[in-house]
Image (cartoon, rainbow, N blue to C red; front, side, top):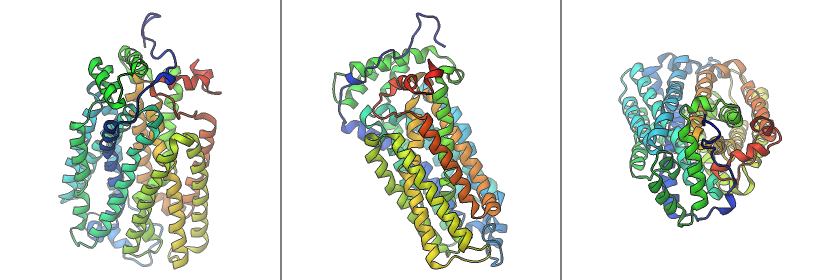
Length: 499
């Protein structure tokens, strides 16, 4: 805590109207390069599902699953239910959870770039191990190193984007992370579609190509400028001022610079950010850091993206058709992110989250009804209903792509004061990866147990999260990142807590 009445108090007045500057090529290029970090996360989500549907991969590492899928009489919902197979997918996210916590002090003490570089190097090591894996332990070790890379990258990149972006375009530029994620998913799906024809080593190429975005992220981390917020927080005030002038394209940066200085003075008086974040005045941000990523995963999107080829294969699609269908959903997700980029700083965060939530609920219910009425455990969907399922899933993915997908990362990264920002982002990433791990590990078992009801399970959670946004999330559009504290003091509910 800040000590005494004469200690640092942080940003004490609103100066948003005094902020100057324009969108410069320098800041756009910096944000685009940094956002490559999101492609690591996306590539892995996309590649995992495709690889786990390739016969050569299953035969080598998961022979029991390989034998089960060959049995025509096997329950369609349960043929891929195998905890070792689920562990291949989900072990990465458990490792990422731990890494995101470790990344917090590194990001704070050594800057956002340091964590970006660490993430890139770890991901390269993991890709190399997985591509050359000779047995299951080596494969899982590679997944763990990939998880370390994702933990560091997801912790640092959204912070970097939020701090570099000008206030009026912070939402759009921050969403470059989600755009890179969705492009990573789409790229992975297209690679899987090609490599599944390269028997028996196509899966090695799919896993090994994960090194490509990792190399780009590492080089970007070396070449990028540090954020002015991080520089000033670490005592490099003059350097921070020069970077701020460069990214804003003007020397008239007094108001924004003063907000950063005020915030950094308070930040430097806080020795234990994770302890400080538990204080009552930080309660709204902590709640959002926990619930936003939790709800993002409980939309069910990762289950669809992880296991899209497996899911479509279970629904009676052929191998090629299942990979093609998952590639289609990846393309739809990437395209829909552009909708959010165009609208987030015009309509605001709340409008997109609420409307996206309603659309996702409708789609989940429709899919559940189709599967419940027209799909049996040991049969196949007709061609007409198979196409309809893919269309409705695509509509679900569109809704996620312009709502909870990008905003599940954007909102938590922009609401924390500087003194707890790194710790807050670590909590956001850790919660996201924890629930990704839980759903990833349990989805195949849930699919086996719930059958078509799995979609109703996720629809129920989406209703809850939509109500949560309506009641408890204030609009952050156009609010300077160092002045977010004033939002909570004006909110009908949170003002009773943070006063």
